[in-house]
Amino acid sequence: MDSLITAAARALASGDALGALNYIALRDDTPALALRGIAMAQLGDLIRAKRLLRHAARAFGPKEAVARARCVVAEAEIALVSRDLNWPLKALGAAHDALQRHGDFANAAHARYLAVRRLLLIGHLDEAEHLIEDFDPAPLPVASRAAYELAVAGVAIRRLRTSIARAALARAECAARQARIASLAAEVESAARVLDMPAARLIAHGNVRIVQLDDIEALLGSNAFIVDACRRVVCHAGKLISLKTRPILFALARALAEAWPGDVSRAVLLARAFRAKHADESHRARLRVEVGRLRKELSTAAGIDATRAGFTLVPRRARDVAVLAPFDDAHATVLALLADGEAWSSSALALALGASQRTVQRALDSLTANGKVQATGRGRARRWIAPPVPGFPTTLLLPAALPGG
Image (cartoon, rainbow, N blue to C red; front, side, top):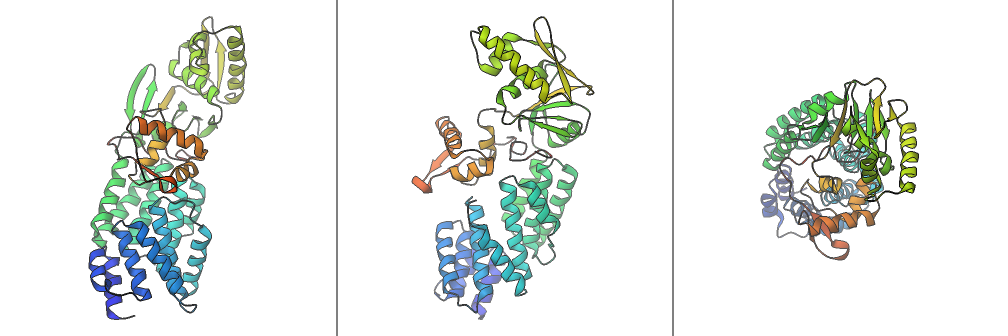
């Protein structure tokens, strides 16, 4: 490798993309094309960067397996940044194995880190944690070590383990300072702010207050009976009862929890669960059926008693009942993903949320009409973006945010 290529690589490692281009701008050999692709990616021209890296990967000969694998890893990182979550993972796994075999442990570790980041984005926390447990960050350069600690913190935040998250972010901040890359330091600072941002509304005894992640972690560790409207689950004594696919049962559970220790009239329950303005006998019969189903789902944690006016929640062992709710219930999960400031496709959002693409498209159309998100491009290149809103509760609304969710 000649001196100009070496100088360009060092400039890229320090985050100086323009300095790297100064060394290789007039060259069209394969190593220069690969480095130019990485530089263009750092400057935000992801389409040109992807094209250059693919060209370089094809141009490297069969004896240059390491260089070809490095191009694949760089292309995978571009796919992650551009939220192309359907990018073939087998290619990244093959590149990781090739780099490992040839002793390039730093780039092999970076490939594994990218796999962790993708799993984190789509909410596969168990798989991400498994990879992190088997991951040795020692070969990583300082900048990549900071990114690795951000991934560790991301998993911990989504699991509501705030002390572990704070420790990981402290290590990330230290590594970012050593790397002296301003954009990386800003990313660490932004991630750290999440821990001190409002995360949800807590509704209890008719009162509403704003809570942070520390408060929610303490609440979930208590003996309270919690209806979580962010993840559509009921939490009690460390156990989760998912009602994500039972919207009527969840609406009933939330209404009963918000009114506790009082009862809720049948008219209110009909309006909340069925949106029935004028209830007839068929509605009341269906309400009895759905309350029976909810009673069965919550049997280990609470009972539901009939009163003269309606129904009331009766926790079995919990001393308190609370509801965790997002600030904006309308398409809040889609906004939570878009709040990272990156441009998402509807297919990537559907993959991350585990929803159909049509469902996500309807949500995007509604958010666009209300001016909450903006669309760019056309056809398959169409992407949606929303600027981060200060104080917006992104964490609890992301996929698999709660333990065991």
